[in-house]
Length: 168
Ligand code: COA
Image (cartoon, rainbow, N blue to C red; front, side, top):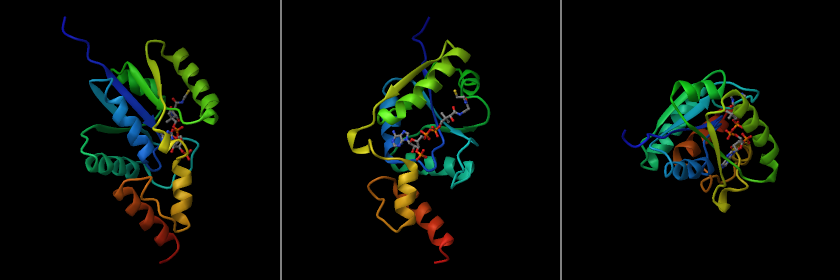
């Protein structure tokens, strides 16, 4: 028997992807042979970008970082997607204590639904601890500089989104 192929999934809404997410992606890659970024098509979040745009922004951002990774979108349960893709591991970023309860609940539920899948939590680099997609959007909507938080393609997409909205 050859060495085991470890497949990981990194799920999220990614509305849009930030440098914090990319940091988690880069670190997850050290632990798996194959990583799939899984973009949830719809959840309770009212997203700024539709799922096709969120996927494209991830692909463009990965290309800017020189990474070649599969990006897929999914509906339904994360564990069903992970199983269908033969993944053994799900990665999540854990930024602050405030993330813990929500993540803990989801991890326990996922474990009940799919005991064979392991969830791995990574703490982002400390420069990204305070980052979130909503905060980045808020700063962008008010004309602030977001270049330290997102890739150039996401920066352009947010600028375009908010200048359309503001009729500029
Ligand atoms: N750096 C920067 N920001 C980060 C981050 C990191 N490393 N990790 C998370 N975030 C931020 C995101 O920007 C986002 O910010 P926002 O709330 O301001 O938009 C927030 O943390 C969490 O977003 P994200 O990582 O995209 O995940 P999510 O919580 O939106 O996604 C799913 C949750 C997709 C994993 C979950 O909805 C899911 O599994 N859905 C499928 C249905 C299912 O299986 N349900 C049962 C689950 S028990």
